[in-house]
Image (cartoon, rainbow, N blue to C red; front, side, top):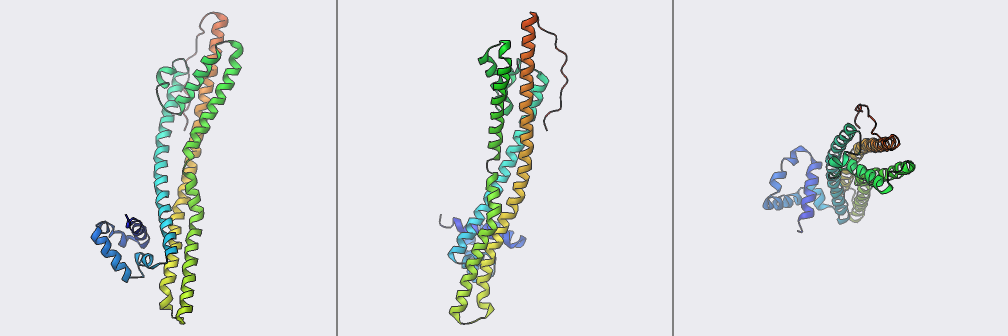
Length: 284
């Protein structure tokens, strides 16, 4: 367990060091090979792994935090993209099904036993209609209360889909400064070494400065993808919110149509003939 932070640091530093070092990742997964690499890194202070091993504990902590943040950014982005694709596909199919039906009367057979945002909207509309009765004077109140419940369902679905995007924003905005803190700390230690050694030989202080600059490099490695991924997710979530609004409007229109048809039926005593519904364009 004590080697877990070192393994995480190794993976991140190999990614920073370039394709040549990345080819050795499979070999480093072997425990013996990994320990040999660590021992060799102690002698090669100018390699990324060697600079990490030789860095001050504060700089090491900064690097490990940035590597963890970078890994979290990739995990969150990939997970949210897959969830968004799935939810958009389900929402599009449910929208088309309800639009094809044209009424909530037959909806329970297709929606009440299914999960999804549109199914919850349909269930809320049917529940409100059943609770309020069928009186003509209740029609406006039914539509208002059902619309309020549908709006809350839309807001809840959008809020759940936005979870995790704030982490990308925080990493993108703070990672460079965290890396800069590690750099400042490392350079400060290098100047202290200069004063203690009573020499200005660059070969003595260069390793410490390189270790410090590595912290800034890892901070940029974490921040740049975070900013890009956040912008991609923000656009995708914005499109998903538009689809939610379209689905909510469809449920409200369908409920209003059913209430009007029911009122006509009660007034005339016969079931009015309905025109063939023209399918509208599904939410995109």
